[in-house]
Length: 203
Image (cartoon, rainbow, N blue to C red; front, side, top):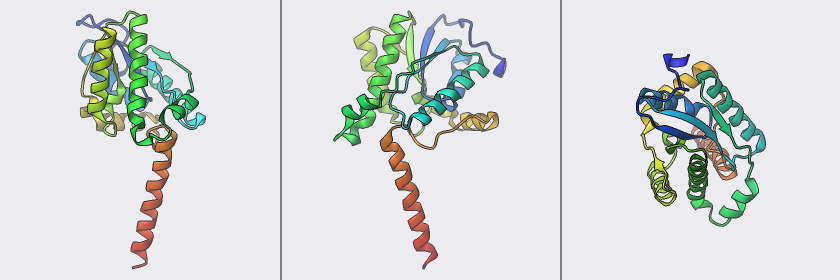
């Protein structure tokens, strides 16, 4: 068993958790941290705004691969909701992360209730690139409204450990957040760096 831990049996806390999983690499450290805290959990892959579809499939495949290696049960929602995402954020692109966080957290909380889990959380709390405070704010509001517990842990402390482990295992690592806008920003940043380097070389 990876890490010498069993992810399938309830821990000493008795808590059962439904963990939203955004990708394979982001599952590695949270899985270890939760099990060390004696929390039994099931993964839930729900990421309907990933662009393009080939990228969506790569991330799903990586999440499945990691969950299989770790012995983590993974529930998969194959909904590819690009149209709904674009309709919701068009003309409000700078606020798109608000919508992205809210729909994912709403869905995992709803699924947790329907599957009789005690609480919910997300591997989004692992990424140093996400708006940590905003995720917590939405999760707490959803938890209060739906009467289901939100489990919080700052998984960012294992950021480098998760990176090292994903590289060691050869897990697919994405190069941008996921939506079509973040994909554009990725290439915009690459272009800016190239232009900056070109100007520097011509001095």
